[in-house]
Length: 218
Image (cartoon, rainbow, N blue to C red):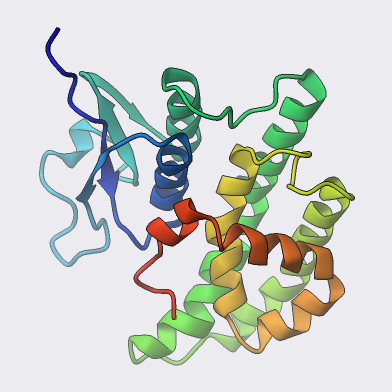
């Protein structure tokens, strides 16, 4: 039987959502190929990229002729299509909690934590632009509410959605790693949520997280 080519992931190594998909592949032990696509490059993405993602976002994915886009869909497909440790709870309550956390991250956390805090505090100075202090200040109460929600959902569990690592943890890690790089904002937020900080420290030591380290990480 001919070998099936490994999955191909199209996206940028710095991207939160590309990293979510990469984390799922790494945790499952699936060999894959990352094709760098930078949608913010001066020339934009490759001309044929809209064929892979009609909305021009990253990542996109291909496996044995099957094409997919949206990081959440890709991560779920990877968990269900490949052997390896399960990344979704088997019970309805656990799976609902996982999906709730992922929805919180997509709906509320990504914009506030990544774009309004990390990009303004860390990336803006790195590119020679002054941070937008008003945008950062407006995002801080939202960030506190997000961390409080994740803290409350996690409760006394080892991982965000229960006793085992799930896609919720892989969804959260890239966003919270970037938040932790934003100072002095991170220093103001983390002391209120020490257990969440312990979770972040633990997940940052996982081989999958180390293997997908963002080029923007200090």
